[in-house]
Picture 1 (cartoon, one colour):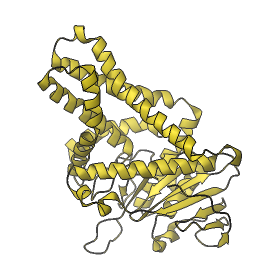
Picture 2 (cartoon, one colour):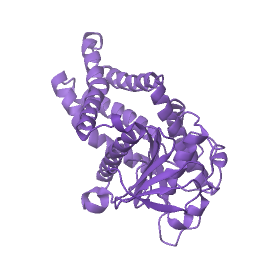
Picture 3 (cartoon, rainbow, N blue to C red):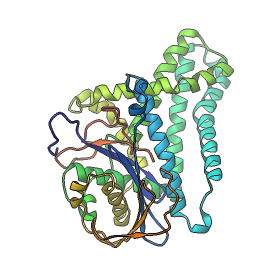
Picture 4 (cartoon, helix red, strand yellow):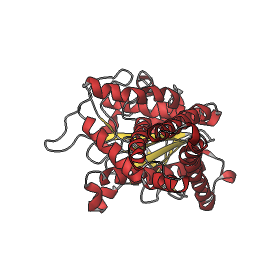
Length: 371
């Protein structure tokens, strides 16, 4: 790990894949880089003030996990909005109203597939599952099976496979940064697409915590009717997030533990579905996103890259950058409207990793793991 000033926590970076691009998040900002249909790379950077810095409650155990998830969702939605508009032609861009409808439909779909359908399934089997413990366990296993089937099915779609490739590019760029090597496509491409601090791991842990919690609690109170069970499951989501987050925090720094590594292994297996080997032009996009959350003194590690860049900052000024490293900016008029991202953080470390041979993701010092 690179030297850090005494008394300061290590720097964390990470992010997520978006449409035709990558979002990266740092300590004081996030940036999304998108490959436009014209071939250039659009980069938008926004300042970041986490919820934990604005509201004291979200610095406390269990509540901090909820704050981290809220930050991640807010940034992720905004990053997806930016990437959706920049990856489409000017005539195809989505309005705010269309984006809000899309998000509403997505939330409804999540509730239907991962909460309501498993509950309906076990309700239908109720007479064949007389034991309350088995009944609730089957519902939890159905929910997990629906999640895995969903990942497999959407992975067959061409556009989603490209998102999974950008997910792999994000992980490779983070690995290369942590290894303190020059950030150039050839170097970055040497690294694995799996990263133990990926948000996919966190999602899997959420489903497992949900399975255990609902099985134990509902078995203790019997078998609540469907109209009671489903709202309780929805209301319990923040509690589950808080428990899962604290569990990951306990494992942080204990990545050499056989038990911790065994617990994280299924998440790495799941990443074999959610990450794919990226192309070099996708890696270039990931490097550009990471570049704009690094402090200026570290940007010399970015190698000259071929694609032209259009940069929009927090202040709303738009700049065009010629191909190459971090220099050569010239101001340009016509800044696109800002919207902004989500993402997880991964801790810097010193040597190139093998697949999954990294520290735990998400949960240290109130920073989320994702990507």
